[in-house]
Every structure is written in structure tokens, then in C-alpha cells.
Length: 346
Image 1 (cartoon, helix red, strand yellow):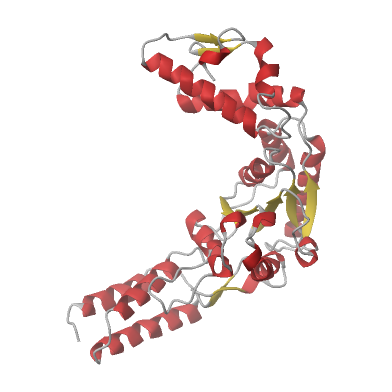
Image 2 (cartoon, rainbow, N blue to C red):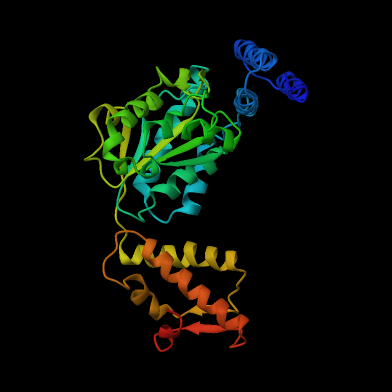
């Protein structure tokens, strides 16, 4: 046995003593550490220590009993939605009704579990699906995490891999839970319609489990090999359309169709939200740059019709970068962008 391994064993035992985890998981982890000790004693590989250490690190850093307190004052929730989104009154009404259902379950049933179909925002690129999910998290005072389903190539990316391999990891759901540090965040399941066709069936099977209140309180990640309670997670999904989403999944979702923006709405969103936010992030003030009101119609359709505001956001980002460049290179300190000089900034 490598004598240097004993301190590592003691460190793992000490780490377990300083965390709050379920008692049966504590027993299971302690037994695993003891197996690693015996393995080394009888000439086993040091890789067993690495595997055990990684496992203990994960279970010790998951929020088994940590959560945030919901803000269920619907007036405050509405204020946040109004601040972050121009118009879209019907969408906001649907969201407020959904949160009202959660609030009344919590009040009258005394439950923290989410017993309502998850929201699915369907709409074209740039119509506000992701930002609405973020706004709901902000309004409730919950942490926010995003899982891009377009980036999942295997069900193991979602479910995790068995810890027996040193390179194994938990799946995207448990990684998101650890990242935010609470057991009741808002988790955005983004772009459900972009799953790799080869893995679609298996991934959708896990998705049904995540969205089903009867199953998600005992969610098993293959790496943890122990149930984690996801019943207090508020899952929100997005998709460009529902054509590629199985009925079994849609049955557990409440569909909210996102409308396309009119040009007038885009201009108002750009003036009130996008431009001020991006200027603030860049450290610019109104003395550094202004956009002529007459120019907004041209900026709204630089490449033809667009249902959302993504292209408009990129256009504004480009203008701000050019302004920053001109200021830093001594070409001026204040610019009015208009039809005559627009080509200098795009």
C-alpha cells in the first residue's frame, strides 16, 4: 500500500463529515471510501482513489437541502415582466396565471413540489423565448440555468455516466443543479426540437421523467447512482416548433406560442431595452453616441423581414463596437449615427 494514499482517504472522510447529505448516501459513500482503502492495501490501483475522490466531491457539493425563497407577489412579478418585455400582454397573462397556480398549491396544499404542466415557449428565433424564462427566474427570485438540447449528442450527456470510469461525469441536469447551488432553480430546456435524431428517442424518454411530477422527485443520474429530488425545479422549455416533439412530452407541457414582433414593436424594444443595456455594458453614455430617430426603420430591416429582434441586436452591437473603436483611436468622443454616416458604423 502507498503510505501517501492514507492522508487522501482521511481527507475524503473529513469532507463527508462537513456536509449535509442524506444519511443512506452518507453510508454508501463511506463504504466506497473503505473499499478504496482496502483496494490500496492489497495492491490496487491509485485510480480508485481518483474515482472515489471525484464522486465524493460531487455529492458533497450538491444542494441536497438548499433552496431559495420564492417571491410570489404577482404584482412584483408583473413589474419585472413589464420591465424586461415590451407589450406581449397575453403572454405575460399566461405566465402570471401559471405562477398563480403554483402559489395557490403552495398556500393551500402546503407543497413545494411543482404540480403543473411545464411551460413550453414556441416561436421563431429572437421572439423572446429565452429572455422570458430568465425573467420568470428573476421575478421569482430563483437561480437560473440553461441546458441546450441542440448540443446533446447522447442520452448520457443528459443522464450522466457510471462513475466506474475515471473520465465519467454527471449529466447536464445535475451539473446545472450544482452550478446554481439550489434545489429549486428555473432550468431552461432550450431548443427541444434540435435534438440529434440518433439520440432523440432516449433523450425524450429522460425528458418525460424530468417533466413528470410523479417521477422527478426520484431522478437517478447514472454518475450519482442515487435519487436526487427535482420536484421543486421549475422547468421551462423552448422550441422553434413542436413538429419534432413526441406527444408523450407535449402532454406534460403547456404550450405558449410566441408572436412575431411588428417593426414598431422592434423599434420600441431597441430604444427602451436593447440600446440602453448594450451602451451600459460597453461603458458608453448618450454623450458618446446617439441614433437618429429617422434611422430606426432602416436598422430594423437590414436584411429583410425577421420575426424577432436578434438581427437588430447584432446591428446595434456592431454600431457600438465601431463607436468604441473611433473613440479609442482618437476619431472623436461623440457621434450621431444617421442615414448619411451609417456606412461608417456598419
